[in-house]
Image (cartoon, rainbow, N blue to C red; front, side, top):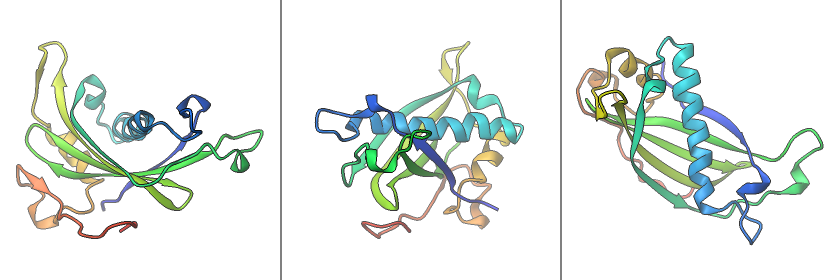
Length: 167
């Protein structure tokens, strides 16, 4: 079974810009926290620890749909406000994969993003291929990839044509 990975990310006061909104560059940090939780903690839980040995970003693409503020009214003495990040694997190739994200402020979609990641051999300082175990783990979070094509070397989820809401 495949599904999206869902991560509730705590906002920090340092995430804010001069206007009281989460700074645009901090969105990448929030996406990174969710991605690390999925790949490093989630991967290890499934017996795949190799992503922690080296993965680099080839490309980021971010669409900002609405501002996200710190919203003190929804924080408590015990907890700062959070955003929900849903992420999934959109494409798997032999030497790279694409993670797609949606960031929700409460239940309102505030941003969409994609990151192309490349497994990397830190000792040799060069990209490497995705292993069979890594591919199997990534497929757990690839709900849009057709089941009939899961063993293909270059898999891509069908592109959604909807705008402005969650699918």
